[in-house]
Image 1 (cartoon, rainbow, N blue to C red):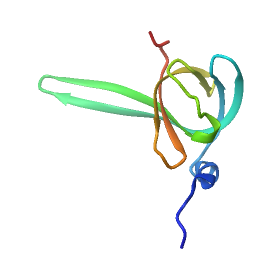
Image 2 (image 1 turned 90 degrees about the vertical axis):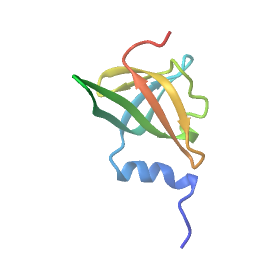
Image 3 (image 1 turned 135 degrees about the vertical axis):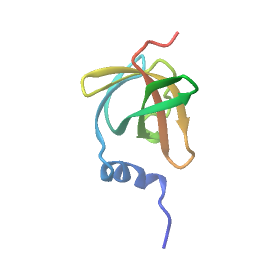
Length: 103
């Protein structure tokens, strides 16, 4: 059986719940499909607990080959800015997101 290839990434994203994304890279707006996750986590320290979320987006790399810090993604009517770009070498890129405009 052959493994998954880069051309399989868009259909794989659809299978796990892709949704509409408006993406602006500083020069153009495009509409993409990607998987959004706003994972909540807690860190337990002695005498305190820190709670946070780490929103991120998975998109097929071929649709955002020049993604960079500061690009804007609108997801579910909420504007996020790209704070990290993490291509995995198999055709999938994880974008770390923040509601704050990067410095």
